[in-house]
Image (cartoon, rainbow, N blue to C red):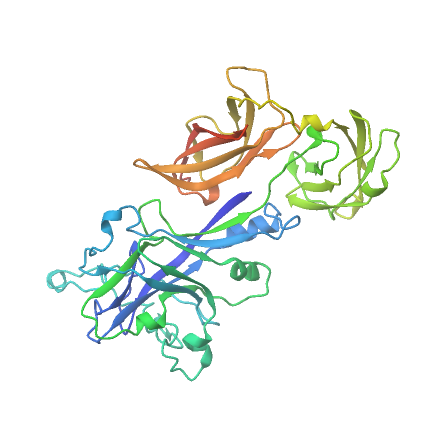
Length: 486
């Protein structure tokens, strides 16, 4: 399993019945109640944004992200709440005097705009500070587009604010009832982070069934936006793409590229997986089609229920076959797996024959009267050096040697191991990639670390190993720093 983060290409917070622009504010303040910059009985804001999906599309095109073996590719919009770090901020007031909103619903909707785009703008503040403007230009305040009414200098939203929350537009697509609501969440305390599910939306865009999308918006439900008579403003804040912290909003794509090669631990009476690795000039390549696999017994005879096995592309250049349980054979004994129907660029390639040893079930199952003592582990890494500075254009293959602790040569071949990556903000560990299984091949354990979607910072890697019912975590086994390249 791996993740990829896609960041915002632009964002803006637009205010009801106002020309103000806050596109470059590091925080989006979603408020309702008495308006901050308007004289009408009620006011509210909406947050609009668009996503840069170029790296995600590139990885799909090269099959680094592949859905050949699974369709379980999910996409989650993540935005960090500015008050999520301190419980003391609950039921208090923000710096502008607004109360902290609680018990509300937010929607994630698709902006009903096709055929034109919108600009982010250069504004920062909601309110023009007249004391500052009297003596000099207030560069933090702007009414340049986009805003509630305008998308650009020469174009307007088909409906101010992107849609009508009272369903008053003659075009039903520009009303709340006509919106595509991608997701809806309830927030009880108001300090929760945003985690909207965008899986169907993004997958439809990636596979071409959805086109012309110009961005998305986040807003309170109409029942909250239309509240009148409030004498206070209630707000919730989230970091935007212009934050100077680590907490940029992002779309997290989770996809399954896990390799669990059983060639060295192929066990009788158990389903096992085998893999074919295709290279050209040292780099992974995709074949023209998925190979076919036949399994042969020790006498060189095909096993009837294990011939013509279909394969799938797990990730770029790596093909996976699931072999049904081999039963009724003496162990240990040698079998063969023959990969056929191989071709590249229209040219047929010769079959590839590999071998594996069918082992007794005791190599996998331990059943008896005695419990098994847990094992202490040690780790060596290659691919990233300890305390190395890495450019944010690199893609590193990190090899992990797993061995018994305090030994130099007792390397373990079949270990259930996981890694996670995080940064530190003071004493807080901010997860970048949560616990993820480490790939296992016949000759190595490894994971791929792509720096291209990572924010420059100091990064830490923990390793977790499951043994005898224990989950042992080894802290900060690898530390490195990602830096900008120019």
